Image 1 (cartoon, rainbow, N blue to C red):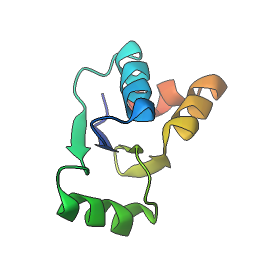
Image 2: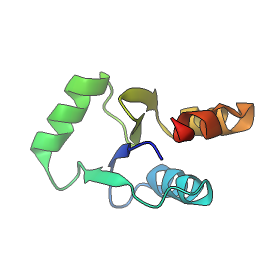
Image 3: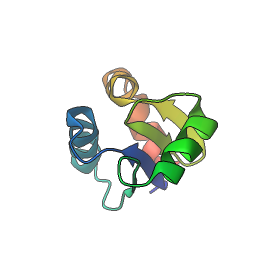
Length: 85
């Protein structure tokens, strides 16, 4: 399965929902980066994505966006294809 990286926050409801959806899709390892405990990672996330909100999700090297974007990929059926690589 393709590597998944998610910039996240500890008390972020959308982050938890994204993680749950990915687990339902069979993702057994998620590289989760907590930006609320590491300001340097927050700056890195902003630099990589141009966004300041979490979650910010990467499937492989592709930035897919936040939870709404992830849910849209699931609804369209594209998420399964992306996760398979």
